[in-house]
Image (cartoon, rainbow, N blue to C red; front, side, top):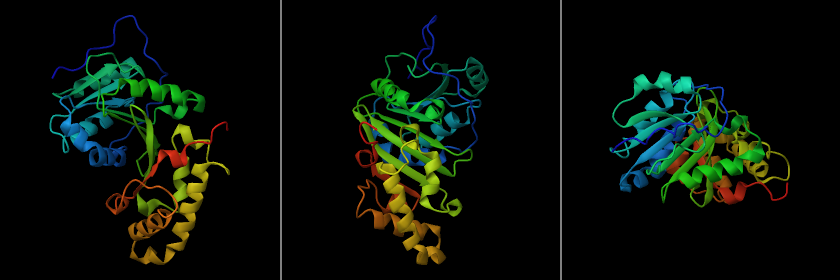
Length: 271
């Protein structure tokens, strides 16, 4: 299949230049989750196109995304999109069949092809919270039917990561993922909440209550610590599942993940 065309000449990309910080394997936790939960949609698609939006100063995340998606769907293709032209130029030598790089922003360069996946990691961190809804709406409008937008934030080496998954109708889930050996308590992940939630980690907001309950369950699971951080995590997650609508099961919990229905963590209206 042909790659999507470049953005029309004379138009400006939507968005602002980010710091561009990137590292190899930084997004491995997000990629692992995408291939597990969205791999079947990629395989079913007649045009399994994915977009790595805002890949940064180096193209590692786009290169890795293609490799990982192809473990789930051999026909997957990836387009890396960056708002900074110099970054696109630097990435061009890494192009190969199924991997291209384009200049653009939140408009996702126009094409007749609609991606079945848009991944936007560490992009909205610098934006105001009030801007998030409009960006989500714009990106969701570019998705193919049944497509997925994954937007979130992680630390510099990918040990801690939180992301929101959205379909064309809106946000669906929030996933918390960590390298468990580096985790002091679940609320350590608060600093990696995506922009839509990071300022809502205050008393009275659902995400604050969730992390509070998770910390309490983690403390109660301390007797399992000698069996390893994974067993302690699984025990704590199983405990909070009685009060919070989790959408995954122990197969994902073993990976240091837990996914919660968005409706349970969404910011309170009017706050």
